[in-house]
Length: 62
Image 1 (cartoon, rainbow, N blue to C red):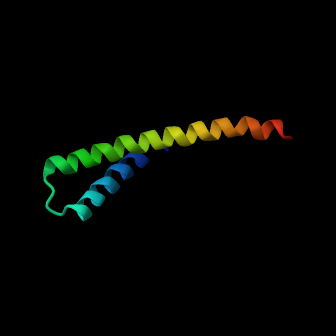
Image 2: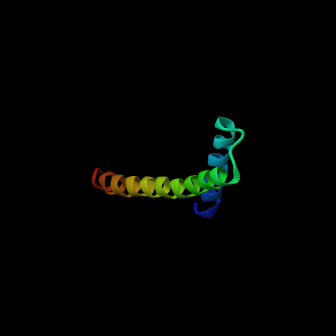
């Protein structure tokens, strides 16, 4: 999915921080955006790994 998902992850993390701490400064919001961006990449990698590991098992069952 790529860049779009990473941007969405950054926006969601920044919005979540805004709900938790409405007075958060620029630095905290930037850190939240970077964490969301990087976190989404890790989640996407884990999903791909899981799909690849379960796909050969499905092929052998036929």
